[in-house]
Length: 471
Ligand SMILES: Cc1cc2nc3c(=O)[nH]c(=O)nc-3n(C[C@H](O)[C@H](O)[C@H](O)COP(=O)(O)OP(=O)(O)OC[C@H]3O[C@@H](n4cnc5c(N)ncnc54)[C@H](O)[C@@H]3O)c2cc1C
Image (cartoon, rainbow, N blue to C red; front, side, top):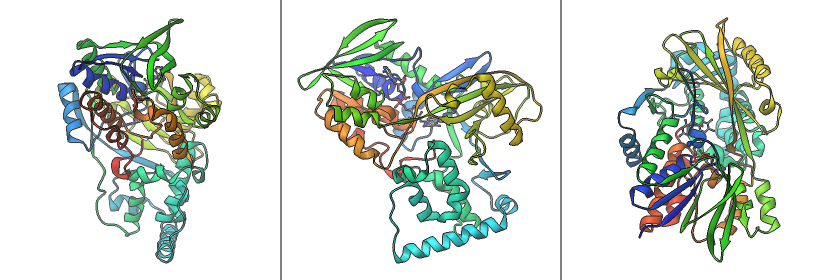
């Protein structure tokens, strides 16, 4: 039976649900806050340059999902080689590291210290395993304090803006191959000889138009099948009627509008969704929602009059003395992301909405970042012809030590709403990847069309091995 499905948010989760539902003949309406689809997987264009909202590469372990995406994209998708490095104490460590590269670069005293710490912690754990609550516990328990102090502690503190002792171990446990870096150190220390299992040396990426092209194609598919995507439309209210949602209220061009449907899929931030319910939820749920925070990001996108800066896709900068956390050179993702004789960089800065980094004027931010680029040896007098910044308020759901209790509490309200499916990174307050959000969208469509149990959707990106690398 054809259903009217209203989807809140047009990022990968909302779009993929809409795509599969429209394909099956349902009437689909997407309501999107922004002036463009794509959510976090959007790309920005300036002259002949393309900048993702932070470089996004598509990788999945799900063959069916890969087939769906490659069929959708046709010859617009290619496999790009991946090369990541970690810049630590003035040296670049290539990943996956070759033994020679490691041995020639790592300070022998540091290696010895790490090795001792590693031996200590593994021996101690054989006698009695230490408690594991936080990200810090989890890492130190496996790799020792020395390795934690060198890389993981500083990187995590920069990423989250709070000490890793305040972040749940769940995050570390899921980001397994983030810790491949640790495998790397262990390899250096002779504690491991096998190649990293989960590292993909290639990723899918659009030939032109950046990662945003994937989302544009999904939207084209939806509208091609008669679905509608309403842009510049902020969901402000969700009206309940007995056990379900009756209609959704949104503001577009200063006007308040409503839309009704049989089923509603929400991919907008969980705390905002719960607070938009009408009748309003009990105060205790609002308090929980208010305590569920997101880490934000600001990107400095710079255009450089030089052919290339490096050949890396990602450069990680763990040291706290640098504000920049990661650097991407879009040309290394697709050669079409910059003109042949020019290049560009995306500098990723973690922040909170309203703080110094979030509010800094572009000129000040550019000056500060250029000083860092020089110190990092990445800018050596090259001319910057233009720059602009982009921002994400809801970049990373912050996994505080009790975040899962908060999510469970919110689901006390959501579970009884029969015609609601919350999915995606924001909708479930789950630190997932793009492929997970797309898969959730597909499964939501199967739930609506064929009665697939909801529990199948909620399993995605919960399992520890679901992740290939840190995002
Ligand atoms: C810097 C960075 C790099 C990443 N790199 C990768 C990568 O390389 N590979 C990978 O697989 N994943 C990556 N990810 C993760 C990936 O971006 C997410 O998993 C994915 O985009 C989540 O899709 P989503 O649809 O669930 O959420 P979103 O993309 O956040 O979409 C939610 C949508 O809801 C809309 N919305 C919000 N509020 C409202 C409202 N009130 N009314 C209407 N609409 C609203 C938003 O505008 C947005 O369009 C990265 C994430 C970040 C932050």
